[in-house]
Image (cartoon, rainbow, N blue to C red; front, side, top):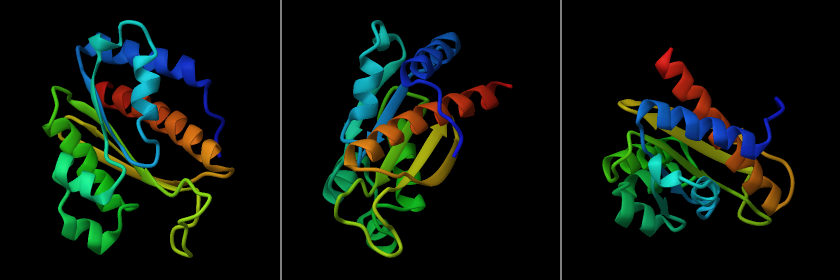
Amino acid sequence: MTELPPLHHTLVQLATALKQRGWMMATAESCTGGLIAAACTDLPGSSDWFDRGFVTYSNAAKTEMLGVPSALIETHGAVSEAVVRAMAEAAVQRSNACVAVAVSGVAGPGGGSADKPVGTVWMAWTIGATTHAQCRQFAGDRAAVRTQTVAFAQSQLLDWINAASA
């Protein structure tokens, strides 16, 4: 695993990149329960680049708030590429943002399975009409999994924004 930059430093860079482009960001969070949105809004002036966050912890919330088809969740599970892609794309569609990050995972200590052990997190990033997704396996307790998810989601979003602008 690559070393992640300190969370605050990455967040400042993310805020700067979004402001420079005049872009707004949204989040669609499950296992992090709003921690990504909270980190964003910890920065003064975040209303210049952060539009809204959807905390869709339950499957019903994913369907009701974001329009993720229940059949998609039933077929693939909430912790899946298909579901996080749908979450990220819906966050853009249902906000004033053109950039979104979505996360769904198994933070633990329970809830894991052989296919999706504790620490499994699917993330997706939508920038305009393009969506990228990645699965990561994070180690540690519930707090560690959630903290690593926030850091990786923000760091990877910054990388995708920079790549989209190159």
